[in-house]
Amino acid sequence: MTNYPGWASEMAEIFKSGSISQFVLYGNIDDWVTFKSEEKNQLQCLSLKDFLTNIMFAPFEVVITYDRGHGIRATKGGELFFNFLKAFDSFHRTAYSSGVTDAEISMDSGNALPKDPKRALALIDRFIRHGLTRTTRDKDGKPSSNPMRIAVMIEYAQYLLPRAEIAYTSAESVETLIRILDWAGDPNINNAYVSTCLIAENLNDVNRQLVENPRSAKIQIGLPNSEEVLNFVHAITASTTDFSTICDVDRLSLAQKLEGLSCIDVQNLIERAIKNQRRITMEYLREVKKEMIEKSASGRIVFVESTRTLDDVAAHSEAKAWLRQDASLMKRGKLKALPMGYLITGRIGTGKTYLVECFAGEAGVPCVELKNFRDKWVGATEGNLEAIFKILHAMGQVIVFIDEADQVAGKRDGNSGDSGVSGRIYAMLAREMADTRNRGRIFWIFATSRPDLLEVDLKRVGRLDVHIPLFAPQTEGDKQDLFKALAKKNKVQLNDEDLPDFPDAMDFGGNEMEGVLIMASRMYELQDENTENRLPVGHYIREALKSYRPMAHSARLEFMDLAAVIECTDKRFLPEKFAELNIDEVKKRLDELKLEISE
Figure 1 (cartoon, helix red, strand yellow):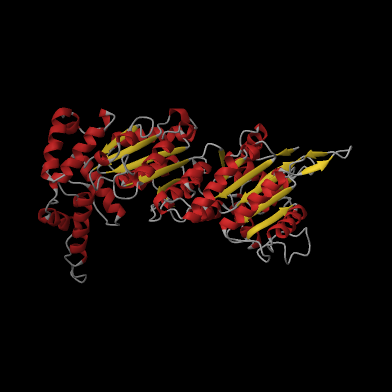
Figure 2 (figure 1 turned 120 degrees about the vertical axis):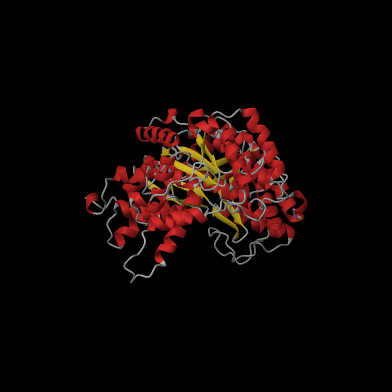
């Protein structure tokens, strides 16, 4: 009895039911497949191809593999396939069996077998049909039906049947698609001991007709969970009797910290440390895990590393209080009490990104930012997003930050001249964000200064439950607190007497304050260093404040403020002057501002 991985057990159950014989495997296909068998009572690691051939397809007589690079190979039952080729050559006057001297060798690219999909799949199809008609003689010498048990693996299916618009699909691809769909739907094949299996990294890279075909089963191979990682760590460190000599934590803690990596990455991380005589410290784990995850995502996700907490945020007192409570719930594991995500809104320069960074530091949860997952090739963007979701699901608990969300998250109608990519991005994000199984595990944070451009469905309760608006500081105390925080960030030494008095009528955001501070610092540094009567930086701060001119785009900034007011889900987040506004009046003013800014 073999302890199969979850996806393999699902595949076996579906095949045994007799309803479906074609499978599309996708996801973590390049990793080790780990499993335990009662015979050996130890963890075994095989490549996906070897696992399918030797374990899943063990009852089959012949296993045929095909890809465009190597062509047709018989990884099991070579003699039966070779005999078929000889008979086929004799009847059709071909030479497919020429050059093969040992019937048991695998049929590699050195022989005369065709590599092009049209001819190769036609030959495999003939072999399947031939196997279905095989007969043997019983003990009385009478012929009886004995169909051959055949499994066919097609690797790199995304290159054989790539995702493409129907109008741009080649005639050869159409023939290949029809052939494979026929294998899935032919009752003669479904009722026999025949299975076809297509393997691709991302489902979204594969032809849509194949993916949406109800007669084939789509099975995702996920990244290993913490238990599987623990078993793998035990296996590869079995020769280390005292694990504390090479690692700061025990194997269980190490496995929990390595969640989100493939088994191959775990093996590389541990062996890299051991062979270079480097101790596995927390710092080493953090750096190498970050490097491997970012590399596996091809730079499409970037870790947001934060040494700050919400104590480093000036003003925004109600927002900080709420975020601090949710950070506490995360630490205590009260996941059911957490929202699915946040929408953080506000005009430019109000510190949306900085607040997220500080929240991540407060919660002590890994935080990643989605970066540049769009691609110019058809289907590539959706494949990139699918790969990102695969990594996020394996990370255990993670904060996912999307900045400038109105530009990234796509549109429902998809009528943006991008061949529907925007609409598909929207659909994929909406589906993933609404999955309540991810509550507390994948925590979404969208930030935008234009929430009105974000699709309503993405902003609803159950996706982004809490909408937190940020505004420029309203009170003199908040303004001075923010100014001191910015001075500390920019390493400008300030005394209490250096702080200016901010005019009540001046609507000052963080970016404007930082501009004044940098201008004052510049004037201060331009003083002659040999002059004894150097003026303090506070003098130049006041001078810079006097010469400061507000941004020319005041209408746009007002629009951003009022859009944040409209989106707010809790009145406590609003400063007094915004909390007292009538919603109907706000909407009317927004319409006026739209005309003014020509939108």
